[in-house]
Image (cartoon, rainbow, N blue to C red):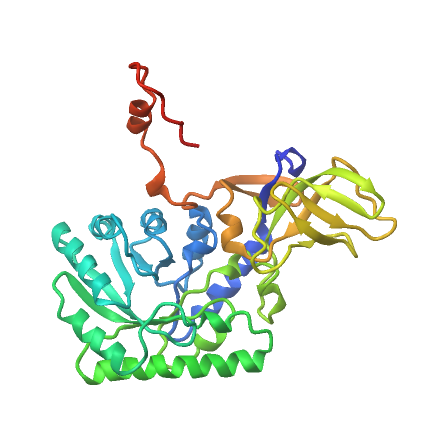
Length: 380
């Protein structure tokens, strides 16, 4: 199979570039006390995670959803769910998962803690907990210091739960382009997290894990004393947003499209709109055509402004670089791994979407029976 045979829109991964990214990050974490816990949500693809783990320097995998954690459990025996699992069925699924692998969960409320503990008790397992600390992202997390210490005490005294430490994600600093500003901000954010970890230990509470970081701060937070693991994910594929930074990782994936219209010399239209890639961090960029700019994305169309004399005809292939990896990956079923013009493999994006909303085959059969009752719409 060649690239020209791939139906579009599609995701293609430069296998050599991705392999170099994996090796660069693994090499950084093979030395020093801090380890890498790659974030599975960045690609949701088992074959990529296998390669990350095989490269070394890793302590397990990070996930954002229970569905991701269920898939990741087939790949390693140490899973961190870096998100609060609140809602029907989530804690029960974590309890079942904890029978297979070590599961650790971020918590920032007693309500979430009690739900996880109840599920752990019913399943006859122990689930690890990291107290989620707000280090400036202003998303989830309790305040560092006293508030985090109070919740940690509650965690430590809860049946079915093991307090394993703290988590604090400095996500607000990941896209800061100025290195000095990003570095200073990361040190400020991690200061409160590390100080809180110290207080836990001084009061006799366990705090083996202090988890933080991302692709933009891996070599800053990952060298701060007291941080034990970094949750970087985007480094493996990269996108145009992270591409602005001074990190040593290459663009390794693109959305492949086909030109379906060339209505005038300065404009072309490709079949890869925002149903094929996100635009939340900005419009994608065009590879290999100097001066070409994505002017807009509609559902199925990418409108591309072209420089004078650009040779781009109906039927030609075009590569667009997305601005944000994770939600772009989530729109596709497979990744095409390529070397030069050859398709080496096709990898299922096995953890995309929300598998708990997929009907089992028995439900489809029941809902579409021909017993005289009206048919229900078939799920897509």
